[in-house]
Length: 216
Image (cartoon, rainbow, N blue to C red; front, side):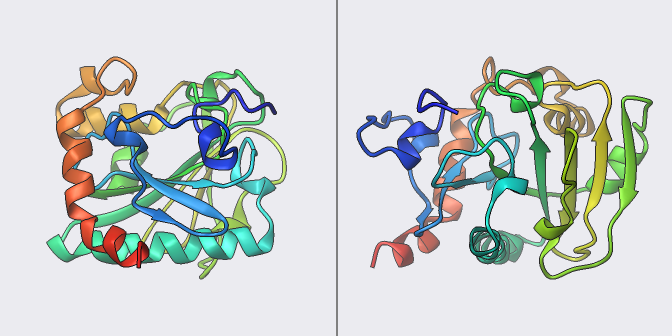
């Protein structure tokens, strides 16, 4: 991988960061940066991005995985105070420039607060392009990610058993499509054509206290 990816500024300080709201840091640790998701379909949609190049989170070290799990829990606990269900997911790309990379080509974990059951929404849309299995319940779901193949993985704060979908026919932003359709805004799934700047700002506001704590 090169330093030309969308999030290259996170692991290469010589690359300037844009002033866009989606590039404002919510949290920074030795191993990751948290930022609002561009195209956030709901307020609170956050990305955890490792601070070194990797296509998917199977490449993270044990220490990096623990740091991601800790940050995900911190952000999830902040977001769940409004009563929403907190979901985590990753599109596991294996090929730079492939559709599973969603135009980013850098591993990142999505944290999304929702008013509906994402697992049920996905099961209603099961198709031949993805084969799903459920891993064992774990305090470290990232350890359940598959060693080979492109995948989609998701789990919730309440049920930490990762659902692993092995992808046979990759689709860009598959989870965004599901969430947008379930919300009745199916045409807005693409973050590139629908940046959702208002919800990005709302994400920063919802997590402002966490960001302030991290800066001290």
